[in-house]
Length: 92
Image (cartoon, rainbow, N blue to C red; front, side, top):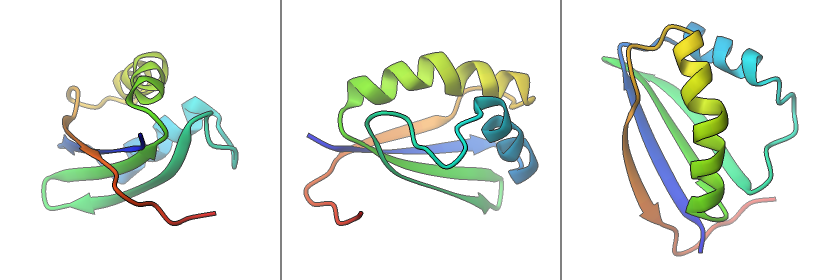
C-alpha cells in the first residue's frame, strides 16, 4: 500500500534542501519506489512530502540518503515526520 510521508525540518532552508538534492545526485530519475515529491518553505523551516509505494522502500532510502545528506548539508536534526496510508493516488 502506498504511503505519504510528511517531513517538517525546523530551521532548514531551501538552499540546504538544494544541497541535499545535489548530494543525492538523483537528476530527473526518482529512486525505485518513489511516486511523488514536493518541498516548500514554511514559517520555521521547510516541509517535504513524499509518496512511496511502500514504507519499507522509503525507510531504506531515508536511512541511506536522507539522513546522511541532511547532516552533510547542515540540517539541525532529523525531521518531525507523519506517515499516512494513501487511499488513492493520481499521477503519471
